[in-house]
Amino acid sequence: MRRRRRDDIIMEYGTYMLMFLASYIASLARLYYVSGILLIVEALYLYVHLARESENLVELRALFTLAWVGGQGLACLRLSRLQGDWSYVTWMCFFLAYIGFGIGYEWGRQYRDEEKREIERDAVLAGRLYLCIVGLFAVSVLCFVFEAVKVGFIPLFSDKPHAYSYFHVSGVHYFTVSCILIPAITVLYLKAGGGKGMGKKAVLVLANLTAAAVPILCVSRFQLLFAAGFAVVTYIMVNKTVRLRTIAAVVLALIPVYVILTVFRHHDVAYLNSIFEMKYGKMPIFVTQPYMYVANNFENFNCMVEQLTAHTWGIRMLFPVFALTGLKFVFPELTGQALYLTKPELTTLTMFYDAYYDFGIGGVFLLAVLIGVAAKQCIRLVKRSSNPVSYLFYGQMAIYLGLAFFTTWFSNPTTWFWLALTGLMYWFTGYDKKKKRDDKIEECLDTSGCGDSDIQA
Image (cartoon, rainbow, N blue to C red; front, side, top):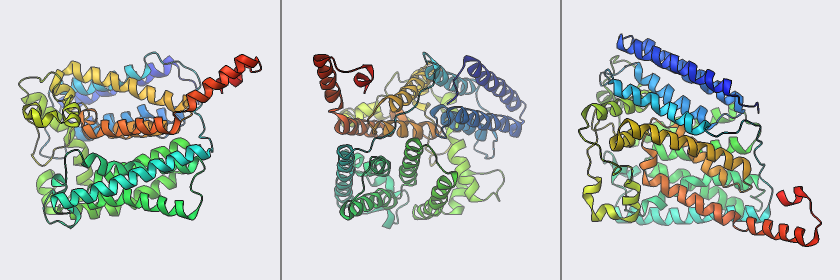
């Protein structure tokens, strides 16, 4: 990997600032296509540059750049009648979100080559990863059955619009959907030398089918895409050479499933077109739907900026605490704030929606800095840790940054539940590593028979 220099950073941010300013001026002049194309081109350029520099297709800053700057570029095209001119405060927030992330990501970074550790073929490690897979599989199936019995239906076989929204038993659903971590853990398990024996292979296949079946039965396109994307990111990270055709094959395989789930959600073309209100009425739905799922989130942010009358000073971003502790049932007023949306049906938001809701422009900037720091720590962890579960932290961060336009990830209790679950698996798979290392150092000191390389090992 080529060494990262300060000149590179100055060049990257310099081009971004110039293109952002040009896009803003073009938008003020109502040259919407020009405004959008400038940011889209810049996002693609920076993604390619950062991915080549790091020799990593899923480098975290590259993913965030593609999602955040590229998503904003798509929104600037203004292809829907729901979209309007943004407030200057909105533009400032979007700019500071990217700059803040970069500051957190680069601040204190040491500019030297760092090679990530290879996953060792270890029978004990593989066994523990296998237990994690089996545990998630069993718990997910049991919780899904419990929820289906409790609510009285399965969304896939229900004729209710938005049936998935009602398929929740509080506290249980977190465990139900945790099966989507299984494909990524399977990648680590196979890399560690697992998967031998017909019995284990059968369980592995069944567990991974469950990871796909639960999102399908719940009619959750996002969870299905998350499971697949998480596994792909993990696969890319643990393999030195990855064929692009392999990634393309996964994407192509998911397209028909995505379409089928859209049908089962009772979202026909006429319904979606009436919701999206595209300026060009004959635009194909397979273009309209992904466009609006990216672009309208930025519009929702602008709606909030223009309509919000008072900040909530941390209440919204503390929602995971209220949800995971049950305080939301004791104090329901803590979670009753209004959402500012272009349309009631279009409820997805950006990563920084709640940060502005709570603290304004300063909140957006500070959250971006903190996320940048967290992303940098994820990279350090996978390069320095011998525990393969560290890749699961990286994979989740990659998904959140790659979908930064989609929702308020870090004020979502499911995000923190999955991170806590990953932390538990990290401890379980490697809890005795430090003890073994300490014992080895003590033995070396007693016998004076070890060198520095032995202690570092």
